[in-house]
Length: 573
Ligand code: FES
Image (cartoon, rainbow, N blue to C red; front, top):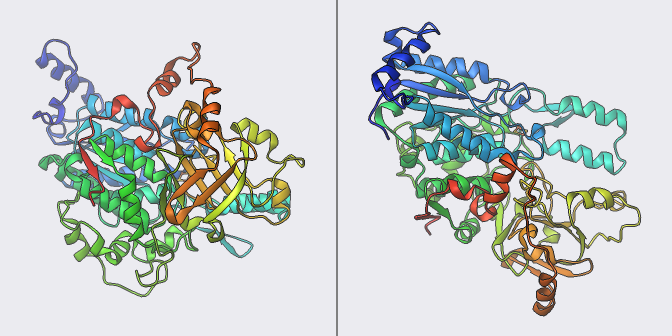
């Protein structure tokens, strides 16, 4: 990190440093800033407010609170804009744009003078993108999230985005809900600003980043609209001034041990499958390799304790009232690295010692009475996924965890849309639905389409779940027996591309096996008939950059050029 401070950092090159500084100060004084203000430590605030992004709708108030905290501690806050990504306003999928946001964040931190930066995000891809960028930029950074939205009510039943969005839509598809009711529920699913109120990707990432030590203790779960969220923002601003003075760069906090703590929390909260990809990308920026087989071993000793949708019953505002992350970490304290440093200058163990006393609640269970006896996510291998695949076992149907079925194959999202509801589709309830070509390069951007809908004719017979397999992702708010992130992906010739209608596939979660029951000779023959992955000559710009450089799921779907040589491993069992 540069020895220069404040306004002197990262001068624009004019060949005369004195003139560069003279010009810089002249321009920023146009905003009414004094020499005294400009002599203070500068705290950048990455502002991801957007009129398209309700998950970030409270950012203006949070920025005011962060600024207050910065100024109370003697710093000068300066906000700057970066890309904002909302899940429903990011065509073709927000994952396609996550790396672009990471590049934007990284380069804007580098380009502008700041002694530390407050990363203000919340919606699914924003927090990973910000931490990927900040980790690469190497400037002291602290994360603040917008916080979860409140839960709501529909005809007396508690609802919230977005597990209930999918449940009601499935009911509408099955004919159980009419047009009037689906319209009514649409008004209630998102009752306030803030991130999805269940254990989706945003909540998962917030809890994992707090567990990793990059957020103030208790910072993950306070709802977006509460006064407490603003106090957390003020505290974050104050800490940002301290980490600037002490030069606490992300690599000093995001160590392999801290990453392991975050992975334990992912398992214990029954968190989103997307988080595996994001933490792999974030750790990869610091040369840390995530060992997914070791992660799976962690899962066998880490129970799911948090009773939140989609694995359980409650919502994020309940988790906050139950004590939030400190409550969860206290339950699995023996499984954590307690001596790691966190962003408030204390060790994780010290922070947990200061957490509030236990009180009765039914959202965070004890290890003796878990929601699910193993961790939420299992890592699968087999001839269908040589580099791995995952299943969120805590949100799957227990009767399908050991299952052999006939494959019903869809070659693309378009093929799926055209045929899934065809009354003549040859499909039975015990078949396995396979969707090809929705991986990082295939779709592109690895969309959250892995929750293949139950064919309408089966849904109307009452079928609620089937084994479904793809090289894509699934929303963290979704549930079902869904196998995701199959690698290598079909588009680059992975075995998933070789599956044909009528083949049988065996899923055996207890042994972590995913097997395509076809002889090797036949698979070799099919492989010989596959087309190679070519990028059309007409593709330019970011799409070309993406297609040429994006890595597979086990490498976090990051760009190859953004990852340094991987030098450390985590988990280090
Ligand atoms: Fe933003 Fe769910 S859509 S967190």
